Each structure stands twice: as C-alpha cells, then as structure tokens.
Amino acid sequence: MILGLGENGEVAKARSIFYSMKEKDDGTWSAMIKIYERKGFELEALTLFRSMQTQGIRPHFPSLISILSVCASLASLDHGREIHAQILRSKFDDDVYVLSVLITMYMKCGDLVSAKRVFDRFLHKDIVMWNSMITGYAQHGLGGEALQVFQEMRSSGIAADVVTFVGVLSACSYSGQVKEGKEIFESMKSKYSTEPTTEHYACMVDLLGRAGCLNEAMDVINNMPMEADAIVWGSLMGACRTHGNLDLAEVAAKKLLELEPKNAGPCILLSNIYASKGKWSDVARLRKNMRYRKVNKSPGCSWIEVEKKVHMFTGGSSTPHPEHLTIVKMLKELRWAVKRSWV
Image (cartoon, rainbow, N blue to C red):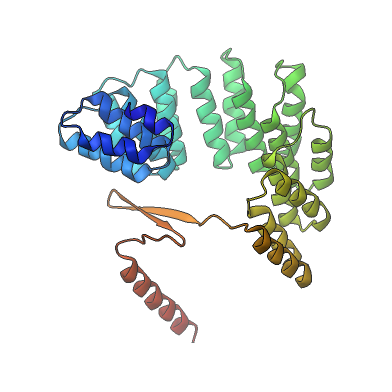
C-alpha cells in the first residue's frame, strides 16, 4: 500500500501511514526508502536509512540498492563507502546488479579508482556493468578510457546495446573526439545492427555542436528519421550559446518553446546570446514575453557533505538552511576580506 501511494506521487500519505505503523518489517522500511529515492527526497531517504539501522533493522537488497542510488545522486562518497561495506557484510558483492549500481555510485562521486577496482574484481561481467564503466568515464570527460573499455567489451564477446552507444558517443562528445564519434555513429546500423534512437542523435548534435560544427549539427537534425525532441534542440541551443550563433539559436529556441512552453531555459539562453551581441531591445522584448507567458526559471539547487551529513541549498526556498544567517554572515566577512586584499 505504501509503495503504491508513493508511485502515484502521494508521498505525504505514504509517509503518514509509515509513521503510524507500530510494527514495521524490513519490507516496509525498504518501500519507504524507495519512495523517497524515486521521488527526489534524497536527504529524507538517508535519514530514514540511518533510523532503520538505529532500530536494529538489517538492510536488505532493495534498501541497499535504493540508498546506493541516493548516494550517487548526492555524490555522497562517505555514505556510499559505508553502504559498500554493508554490501560486503551482507554477501551481496557477487550480485551483478548491485555491483553495477556500486560502480555508478563511485563514478558519480568521482572515485574512479574504486569504480575500476570493483569492475576488475568481478569476472562474469554483464552489459550493465560494462555500460556503467563507459558512462562513468564519459561523464568525467575521459573519452580515451571510455573507448578502451568499449573495445575490451567487444573483445570479451559482449554485444553493445543502445545504452552502450549513448555512453560511447557522449564520451566522444565530452573529449572532443569528433572523428571517432562519427565513425561509431555510422557503424551502429552497418556493424552492430542497432538502430539509432533520439538519444543517439542528441549525442551527435552535442558532439558536433561542441566542436563548433553547428551547420553540420543542424543537418543531422534535419535528416533524423523521427521528430527531434527537446533534448536534441537543447543540445543545439547550448552549442549556439557557446559559439555565439544567433541565427540557429533563434531556430532552436522557437522549437523548444513549442515543445516545452513553460521551460524558461531556452529564453534565458537566447537572452544571453542577444546580450552578448549588444541586442538590448531584443533582450527586453524576450523578457517581456516571458513575463506575459508566465514562464519562470526553476530555482537552482546545490548541496555539500560535511562530516557525513548532507546539507542542501535551494534558491528562493521558503525553508532556508537552519544556519542560514550564520552562513550569510560568514559570506559577508569573506567578501570584505577579499575586497581588502585588493587594496
């Protein structure tokens, strides 16, 4: 019941039922942690996981997977290492799925050495583990390492899937390996019998856009066998801002507003491009249009881990951090200290 409510977005009701229960088994705890993890309540998931341990409930497979995913989302390395230790104690370290999530956690936390160590120790790797390594290296801009893992995967006889190619193409994009990316994309159908999806086209647009080949990126969009989605146009939009291409930026922004009329991102990017070109009347017109359409930008969010506790900060939040005033005071002192150092 709790999980069903959570899956339908009724997190408050699920929470209320959970805390009203006098007796909770490991399945109940796991269900509530899973709800928090899937619905973006990462800090609550961590707190609940600690409470579960305090009450002597031994973590089982589902709760360990959920909390590992939370550690990956928050890049909470200390908590992730603790979960790794529990996985070893619980004898789950021979499960391919657990190890794949563990590798992803280490990769997202920036501990590439530990991720590689977990990967190398397991002999019977499946496609998910290989993809975790490729995607992880790609996210850190290590295109050479990602392509090397891709070659090793091929040599081991594991067939690449659509996720593999998203990772490999992303790696080429982040590391500027345009030639390699083009060759891999072209070989998807001819060599690997894999039909490119929208995600793969988005990777190619990003690859070409980062390299400044904006017209070529536009040709890729025009020749797609399916309609380009917001991710594809967003990749082009970002590249237009980087390289200051106003003409294509306006085309991309128009398409994005058709697809996501309430998303302020394209308008803000286009406004920045107008400003960089000194087109202040266009900036004013765009801002006025945003107000008319009631388009608002989502607040920024960041977090930091201090002494194994994660602190989250959200712009414009109605519930600021408990030490908000102290933090603001310290920032003012630092600002004055920096100014004095310039004198």
